[in-house]
Length: 246
Length: 246
Image 1 (cartoon, each protein chain N blue to C red):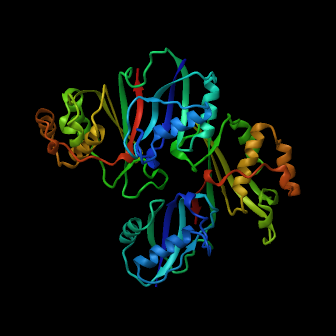
Image 2: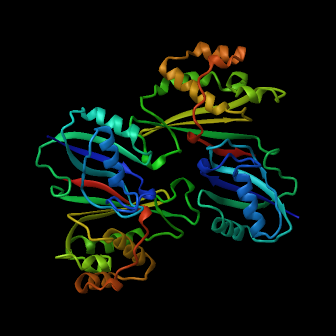
Image 3: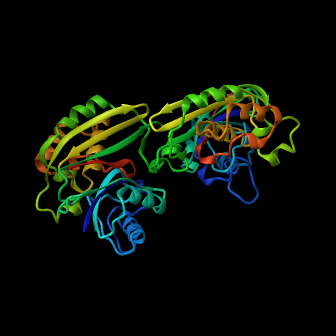
């Protein structure tokens, strides 16, 4: 039995998230159906993570087991011919039998893109948050430092998602904020993420720029777990799973 | 009566070209309907040019006359709120009554984008030609020089379009080829363009890179007007009207 580690990119605009769902089209189902068609027989994949409806991936990793001896190069070419245009296989390699895309992940990096302009970018719809003002990058960078490290991120988690969790403590490795033309790109890396955590972090940093929240609010949010002290959840279209660390 | 000069950008993927058509959705109709709704009364616009189905514009210029005294800034904001997401008004200014977006144009610049990779860019579908090999930029630049200047471009025109033309002589001001990461961008500027002219020029330059055409073929194409000496017509999704000169 071979174990294949595969990296793919997708535009999540047309999908109800990564994870298989009974009554909606997911990335997982689309990819599993395509592999099963190509390799003639039902195959299941282990994704590195879930992504929500409308969230994208630049490098999502999954693994799957197969008896089929298709060469990795052939798998990439055939899959890209069969998959819809908004999903692309970037790489494929045979790995040790015990590799698991989710359990072996040491962390992930997300990217959130903000288009700072009062006029939308027609060529990047559903690909960024259009924000019609200027952002105070220095103020955001300073506040972002408070979030780096191991903290209880309960205030940065979707309420309903918390109930099923043993802990809301996570480690954020780094938050990097870059300005590229009219775009502001926010990279957040960490060992794991709560539901909506990156989107709430970005919303909080925008509130910091706007003066609607202070650095003291962030400290309170981390200490008290009060969702109201953080900012709003920004929309999914600007979010990309950018990298998975192993 | 005011005369307004307006610049807009659009992703042409969902439209049957710029020009009004009886049984298909066009950019012109969508914009005219939106202006007519906003300004309460039928308005017609004069576009600087036509673009084909699936072709985009980064800066398409049109003008229209109105009795309405909406301020230009208000017009931009209101139009961008009412228009579909794939069309955006970039600027609006009041101009001399005799200005006409098409008749006063001194030339235009088109851009054609080629994504050189054996794996498609899922975030730029319908926005470039995916070309799974490397392009020989120096060879293309050298051949492009032969096309600059005033020539009979009959060989670089869609056959059916030629019948209605008085002349197929046009002046190409410049052809600039740039490599940006995995993308090759070809900028073609001139005083006017025949139907499919830029797409056939780009197809010819790709054939030059592949060795399927020589510089001698280009000289023959220009001298003899033989369409077969030029290259194939590349798809519309990579083409953008980039600039209009006045």
